[in-house]
Image 1 (cartoon, rainbow, N blue to C red):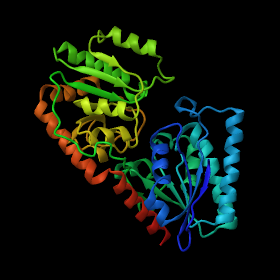
Image 2 (image 1 turned 90 degrees about the horizontal axis):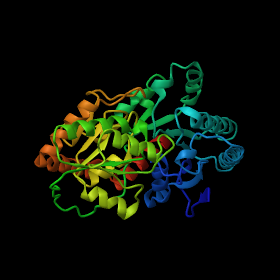
Image 3 (image 1 turned 90 degrees about the vertical axis):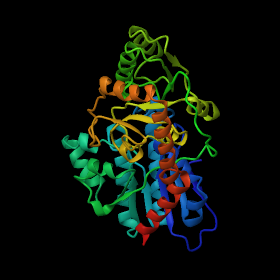
Image 4 (image 1 turned 60 degrees about the vertical axis):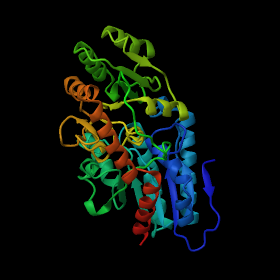
Amino acid sequence: MSEINHTDKKNKPSVLFVMHMPPPIHGASAMGQYIRESELINSTFDCRYIDITTAKNLEDIGKADFNKIGLFFKKVMQVIRAIYKKKPSIIYMTPCTTGGPFFKDNLMLTFAKLVALLFSKKSRFVIHLHNKGVKTMQGDWKYEMMYRFYFYQLKVILLGESLFQDVSKYVKREDVLICPNGIPDTNLQPVEKVSNAVPHVLWLSHIMRTKGLIEYLDALRLLKERGLQFVADFVGGITGEITQPEFEDEIEMRGLSDIVEYHGNKFGRKKEEYLRNSDIFVLPSYTEAFPLTILEAMQYSLPVVASNVGGISTQVEDGKSGFLLGGETPIMENTFRPDPNEMASKLEQLIRNPQLRLQMGQEGRRRYEEHFTLPVFEEKFKNILLSIIQ
């Protein structure tokens, strides 16, 4: 169902949520589902939800066909009708900022702004950015022209303060609100973590080159050449970026078949088992905004080794709850590539030092409990929407 009304709406400010929801599952759609199911949000606001997802799965994102185009314009009409009839206090959207999805979402936002201008002038627009890439694309005249209209007269919710660098050319700081994502706690009673005799390093992401896959395999080769004992677990689905035979060839070419184990996609309790039984979490991506997998790793008291891209520095304190790759300054451009030597150096420190792993993991758990639980997110998100209305 793409459109839902909630009862008991008297005296509540109205919010039209135009956002991505699963499937497919990614950061923005997962948070969309959490908002939709939130008792706090639905008891505070008169909510209507419109799911603007047109992709069937992750591989389908960005691809166009006649069915998706027809579905998109059907959803546009739903948004237009909702604004015309409801005249909501807030029109909340979760658009993309680059690529094919940006052009589609920008068109949706344009229709919504025009309808609000004609029929609902008191409505306030809020966009919640779960991705980045504006700084990378702003030199392109097509994007330059569209970004100026895209960010015109609206509030922007960002996942971390560092991500303001990405949009600062088009958005004033007073129009930006910071709301880090949060996730449900599946590890409610964490016991004191015990290190494996042979440390397990966990990759929990899709098998993609843009996640830093090749550089990570090069770092693993360096660690093996140094005589370190460890196991590298890969948990995640194969995507269009690299096939499973190609992935296996990359492993074999580096002589890593004896230490790399690929387990495929895992969900729910099976995924939690890998989080619970691992010692180190790694995410050497070229580009991220605010990956939920890092929050999952922190929830399970894992030290994190990750690229210092996007808003990851909001999640991980370098040297305290993990190590950041690529320097002290958060990287916004999508041209970043992790250095296998730096990655191997950081992983070696953690592999050789069980006490450091436990210490960093405990600090990560503390930060998760303080900043990144789902109730913390819901309360902050509610207050942000109320502040915009007031």
